[in-house]
Length: 66
Length: 431
Image (cartoon, rainbow over all chains, first blue to last red; front, side, top):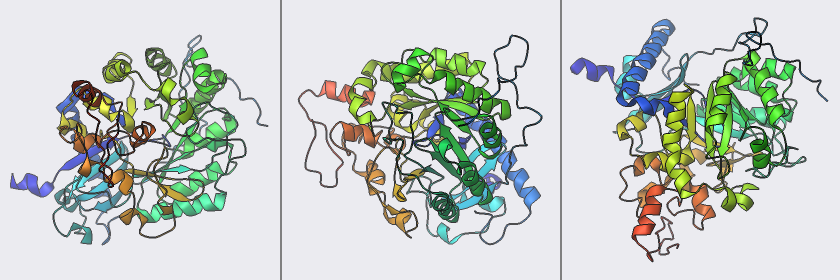
């Protein structure tokens, strides 16, 4: 539990890019799968984030924020 | 005048589907992920898979980001607006000769447009703020000869440019370059064949379809935007099936908005209450049946939450109502910030400092003062009262969205009781 707390949580995933120049579109397809979608997205996105960080090395004091 | 584009390649003899991207197409631009600090932790912008991941402070620390001055005191996601929008809609032009009857920016052939230097300066400002995505639209942005260069500039500054277009001006050279530089391109198609003409007021379906085939032949991330109105709400399945045949990556359904020329025809095109209630289940069914990625725009949030999906799942997926002045904002051709392309007060010029921190109260303040039935709704924190622009069209910016099924039920259960308003000047009700 302590380890989980230290690793933190992914709070939200907004999949894809939004091309619409007027409003924000949300992918309702994922709502079909409920908690399964949350778990699957957390795993996939978490792996991608950690892979990026392993390859990128330590960030500067302000991270790699644009 | 651009030359007629060649016919698209086909995958198999007689197969009407569009070819996969050609080997001759330039490789897609794939930038590195970026991270932006937020009070609750931070946001990672990923490009494979594509998306934004909001993470808490512990997670940010666990991937190597040191504590930020923003992390003083406790803060949870949703406690306040983001440090900057994740996405900005840059209305590069109000210039368009198509003359769509419902155009929400009231575009005309000689409407104003940002010049190249202004557009690049705007993008520079967005990059300084830490914005991740910029959606270029108009008007018809493709008609601007410097559009591709502006998109390249966005890439150079670390932003992902995305594009909405009518497709009327898309030709082979443009499609080839656009597929390389834009993250996602959607062509506006509000119906097939004659439905397109009825929705837009001119016969442009074949040209839109040709544009989609061209764009798809050079890139994978091509979809359609479809405005759902009373006319086409019961005929969405053929649109999704057609998008599937063209091998498009997504279909985004948008609610008809009473903005620009759309304000004049809103009463005739707004969904009936029955259509509004059915929309969400229909769309989920089409997503399953056609195995197509389907998006609903933020103004449809009340129609989604009326079906009581899991709040935890909806929050995780970012299913929210009005996110103007928070997750997204717009910059108009005169350089003014505005919370949403469809409406709201101008907040100041894009290059003025501090606007993001002090402005946008017309969008941010609804939930805290929401009247019934929003006040007692389990989904208020996500829905945020639905679409402010639709509410404004019904008489009061600060009233609950009249298209919300729950609001309609409340009105039916309280005949003669006027619905309240979240206006800061309060003390008045709208009927």
